[in-house]
Structure formats: C-alpha cells, structure tokens
Length: 179
Ligand code: MN3
Image (cartoon, rainbow, N blue to C red):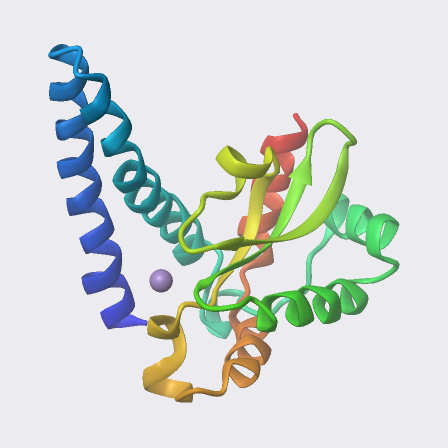
C-alpha cells in the first residue's frame, strides 16, 4: 500500500500534469490533431488520479473503523437495492475478481434512478466520467495493488479489502451524492 500510494499514484499525478499542459498548448495553437492525440493520456492519468484519491479515503485500519459495516441511510439503501450488505459484498467481489486485465470494481450511485449500482471499469477509466455513476467505493485490481502481498491470488486480496473498508467515508460520499 505504501509503494502503491507514493510511487504509482504519484506517477498518475505527474503524467496528468504533463498531459494537460500538452492539451493546453494544443488548444492555444488550435491544433486539432494534437488536441485529439492528447485525450488518451488525459483520460488515463486523470482517471488514475481520481480513482486513487477515492481509494485511499475508502480504506482505514480496523483501529480507525476499517471493516465496521455501513450505518444509517447508506445501510438502508444497500439493503433496498441488494437485499443485504453481505449480498452486495458477494456480488461486488465476484464482479471485481472477474475484471479482465487491469481495472476497478465500484459501488456507485445512479442519480438518474436514485439507486446504488455495481460496475467495473477497465484500466483507469474514471467511473463518473465514463458511466455517469457517482463513485462511492472502489477496489483497485491492477496487479500493482496486490502482487507484493498476494502474488497472483486476486480473490484473496479482494476478500481482505473488506476488513479495511471505511464505510464512514462511503456514507459521506453517499450523503453528498443524494443531497
Ligand atoms: Mn493502483
């Protein structure tokens, strides 16, 4: 987690800044080819920054509430949309473990239907910009997220993430999304 935060996340931020500078120059020069060419790096690195910014807040050590189940309005909404917290966990775990290659599993809020939804995204595609769902809780299943601790056993990593999930943070995101 330390390396993941200090090295990987930092690289997305650095490269996002490079990409947006390139984009700004291309826009200033009205160079349409360069504007289009800049999009992929903006999306990838901007997505990486957005996703990881949520990821670190979504986690907490058990001594700081990690693993304590959701409460209040979020808990009620999870029950309404998935039947139970355990049912949601089982479903999101299965979807996330099954991501082909690198990507993310998400619990998101759909403002159009006022419901919670599960989704997966490839690479660093940011959830809201690509699906319209407001990101509440994300699981990074790039190999860099788990290889040092879990080798190639992605299911064990996904199973362990629930022990440090910070549902107080997720609840705040839900409250903000539904305000
Ligand atoms: Mn990562």
